Length: 101
Image 1: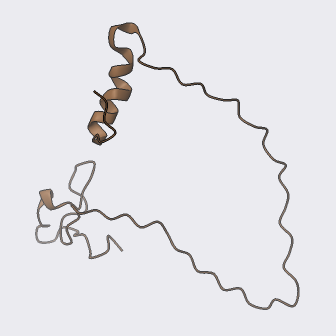
Image 2: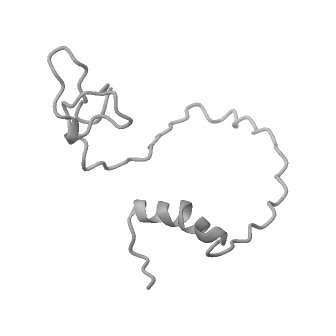
């Protein structure tokens, strides 16, 4: 039976446990040689006619459905600011609406 619908834990079990059962890998993967790195070149200065540069930086957004505003940011666990850690106590640093800013 083979299914592509598996959880992260199942995928980790396949990678770290399934490959080494009975000492024989379940499959082999050929890794090709890496191509040669391109030559590094220095960027050119902008034209003198350009007087202003506008930059818009957009970072990668991560949706975390377990995130809870008001939860403690230093909970002692590997992953804090989650609903399962509850709300921060009085005087304890708390997570904001969009994280700790």
